[in-house]
Structure formats: structure tokens, C-alpha cells
Length: 149
Image: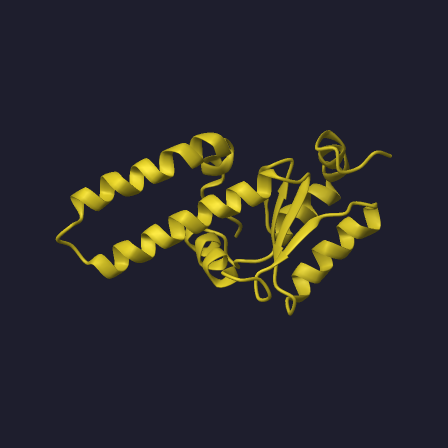
């Protein structure tokens, strides 16, 4: 299925500056509503901001789980191209569960693998394999500086 809101991550600086403002604004409006669900929403929003920041720091970033066979397949594909992706194993890093929840709330189903190339959200295994099969993946990796050949 992939993520439903791809356009929300295309400009990480905008996302990073708007999220804290949006949280403060909603906090004022929702004082009397269910504070637990609002707190969860805030945590997920902050985690999504963290995902966006991590994704923008390297040419290829993969959010993965060490036990996920599709994650392994996608990582292997990149390794075979000679790409050295930055991999965040969500089941092995501190606060990985929060990042996974943010990806789920963002619309990623399943939550892993999630791939970013050049700071741009690409999608999950289906999207990456589709790009590979239609010969768009390698040019995208070259443009991002992840592949030189």
C-alpha cells in the first residue's frame, strides 16, 4: 500500500518548522479533550519529525526491522548495486517503536521497510521494486549521490 501522505515529507525544513507550531496550536484548542490521545499524537508527530531529519542526513536511508524478510530483500538489493544505505533497525534502536508508530500513522502499511533516497520519501518494498523494474531506481540513486557508476 505504501504511505498515503508522501507530499508531507518533500520539504523537511517546512515540516520541521511547522510541526512544533501545529502542536502548540492544537494543545491550546484541545485542553479539555482526551489528553491521552493528544499526547500520543504529539509523540508521533515528534517521532515523524525525527524520521524526516534522519532521512535527510544521508543519500539512502532505510527504516527496517531485523526480523523482516522484505526489509532484508530491499537492503540486499541496495548492497548489490554497491550502495551503502544508512539502515535504522527499529527493533534494535532506542525509541524505535515510536518511529515505527509514526510511520504507521503517516500511512505506511506495513511500517517497514521504508526507503528514502536523497531525503525524499520513496516508499516501501513494492515501490522500490517497481522503480527497479521500470529502470528508474539506479538513475534516482545516481542523482542522490549514492551511486557513482
